[in-house]
Length: 477
Image (cartoon, rainbow, N blue to C red; front, side, top):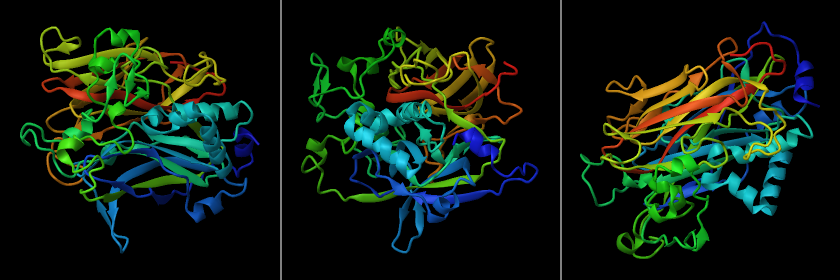
């Protein structure tokens, strides 16, 4: 039964607000030594029994309106203690919820297809393109919404980064049973010897430095004897800026040196052996609180947008990360001590899209833009999303002394206010009366600005967005 036909059978009680419900889930333990990286898709876990039971038959459909994120230590008595970014740094997360059968089918395919497996794991999964492509393939045969994704590259801003959908937009899920978190976390709980706090108030490990243990062979195009994974592939336009992250010969830090169980410290100097076995193993967990309701007939299903990443002008050849060289005369992108990058990309997925080749939509099809989450790293001071046709700003955030511009930097020592860390990024949320409507191929401009008084590696400037398909065109902005 398709989503539209299933929703049409639900009780029509639009005048009665849907009951707001919630549930909590915890990740499996993340066990790391200092300087070590956790970057993997965890094994499938069951959702709470009451959630599974509520949607076990076709008379109800789950409509997820948002979620909250926390990192905690769990004591033996079950009590929780929030974990600070200068203890364990959340680089990014992505979440998948679905039915047991569809989740099993996705993982079975990953077991047979190494390329697809990489799209679901590690840093590859940040774009959500792997899951979206799989869901699009399923929807060519049926329209059951039984696998959805959340998050993506959102990371250190997690405590001040509202993840909500306004009505009537929801993540709709027919039979929720299983969830899988992809987590990228760095143990930063002992500072390296190096610059003083006054010079570098954040751990240098959060920028994923390549250590002497990583073996580069530029002529062979390999790191540690394997092809750079994911490939280093800036678009021609971005590569022309000679950004160090676009070329293996100049690559010094970022996600290719930040994969699962790698160390970001020089283990020859910092440790007694390559596994730093003399250092204690720490244990933290991620906690996610989901908010949901029973779907009403007027619900609008959302899907990931394909835009936006400043390292490309089309989707499919993004590098996702890039470096911020110290600003000096002749450095490309350097303007008055700031590093500025601007690019234009189409908004949503459509047919023959390189990251979703089985997508059934046309570029002319309409979507509503319903959610936009900015993502920057330390040093980021501005990110803007602009309609490239009308030049209208759709969403923007900027840093300021009072932390009210949408970008917040910590000033204290409590969780969510860690001094020197980027701790918050406001999101833009549209409801059914305010959501701007575009064709899927509509061009969007992104402008990103970083403070370039200090160099940074592996930074990102992304818009993590969701759109809702428009079934019957009636108006267009």
